[in-house]
Amino acid sequence: MKHMKRWSAALLAALTLTAGAASAEIVPAAAPDGHITQSVVIDGKDVAVDADIYGGTVQEVQAYRVWPRDDGESPADVRVWLGDSEIVDRGEKRTQNDVYMRAESGARLWLTSYLTRFEGVNCERLNAEGYYFLKLYDWADSTNTYPERVEMEELEGFTIDEAIGSLAPMMDALSVTLEAQPFYGFTVNLDKLNTALAAHLDYGVSPTETVVEDWFTADEHYRLRLPTRFHGLPVMPWRVPMNTLAGEETADTAVCAWISRQGVEFMDIEFVPGREEAVGEPFAPISAQEALEICAREARSTVKEWGLGEIGRHYTGVNNPRVSEMKLGYVLYREGDGESCLARPAWFFRIIYDTVALHAVSDWGDGPVEHEEAETWSQTVAVDAETGEMLLRW
Image (cartoon, rainbow, N blue to C red):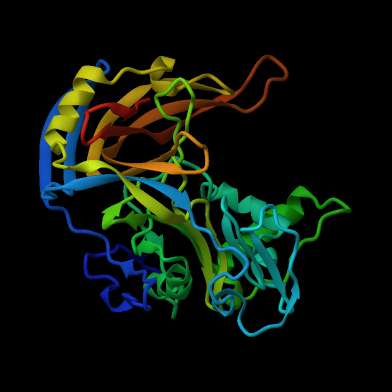
């Protein structure tokens, strides 16, 4: 029987790990410690705020400068990633601190200053060309347009909780604290795999393509994006342009994972914190209410129509803009030497809104044939918890 899954605050307490000096955890999602219900005008738009507050009771926070993890010539026990299979290739390194390995099993591992990635034995199979057609059903993994609430179908005999738990040894090896509530994800079951295959075959297969035609229950898997924590607070996981002349971007700190019944098939994280140093003194953060008031005064759109352009589509307005949660946590962005990140305590949230897009089907004949399609979009906002500076505005 198909059913949907939501996560509770008590989700994965049993998965907490401690391993000597280096420790990491898979922790359950935090429970809200406050709520705000009001309406606020932001950049001329009435935005409904009916938001759970996370971190409203935190008394003191600290900024840090953080450098990416340095694995060097002797990384953590690679058996966590590659098992006991013999290492048959150790590729050239971009720097002396980068490691690339391929096991006899076919699994591969990159540990670098700019990317940590694992590809399991079945990763290539699950990423077959025919899989492209699954985009007919779900957004791609890399999108920044995430739903307000994640609801996912669970695979029979293999829960989402169990899938996330299988990441624990990897997170421990990286000393990363992972929050066990995906902010995005979808389930790839056998029906979807076969439907995608049929769509691909119907579309046509080029001579250079390899198409997987024998999908099995063992190939069913979850594709998840999970947030991390830093010094006990959530890290804003999305890559977003900063409000600076230099055009910095926030770091993509999410853990992206594909997890099948057979184990982790793919794991990717672009910034793994390593060495750090405190910046300034600890301070009391501004409140979520103050952050909203700053947005009302300071937030200004830098792109016409809230960033909704006309690149192949025509939008008919912004409907029902709303905020459903606000979090006190860290915004990580590169600054200075380009290698390190500044981790600033901030209030971050998304303004979710609905719009109607007119999609052009064809530009031939008497002109484009259009159809309306409702879509949900979001804009990310972050307010420095010390200075009140708008770190992110749309």
